[in-house]
Length: 244
Image (cartoon, rainbow, N blue to C red; front, top):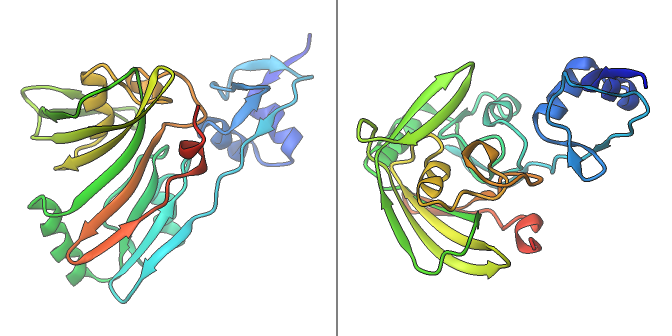
């Protein structure tokens, strides 16, 4: 059996560069059958046929002289979106695997005012997630979080030495051994919802970094944001509505 690095074989099959192929695998978009290819540099049979999931388009939600609001698809870094919408800059970030409301600002005066709203916990942030196990009652997780970075990868944990973080979780729907929940976050630390849900032993489906089972994506979506007197909503992705 002849072997080749997965990303090189994918590059040949798709007619793309090696770096583009590696990026596709790193984003979690490449499958063999129903199995996700996890290691770009792993050896694989040269007869393998890949299936590549397409990234959904960025959908505009709102724009004025101060602000651009987008519905960010999963599998895309917030910084990549910023590069597409220059000179606007990110007001906040969503993890690569998280979809939903993402805001960019067009001028420094508005950015400074908005940052103060975030700091004072006056921005309403509502997420939808599918979590492992059955959660039957609402839970209010008020636990500080500490974040460490290693090799450009952030990891967060509940720790008394961390910064304040609070996540309110409300169960919505149970399907098999999973629960769809609404999460309202305060403070907004790195990986806050993911860390808090793991802490209560209900990690997000697809969030392998924090104990969830493998899925096509991390099942976390930024559904609604209220800033000043404006409210923005990104509809639930099809993957969430039809998730079994």
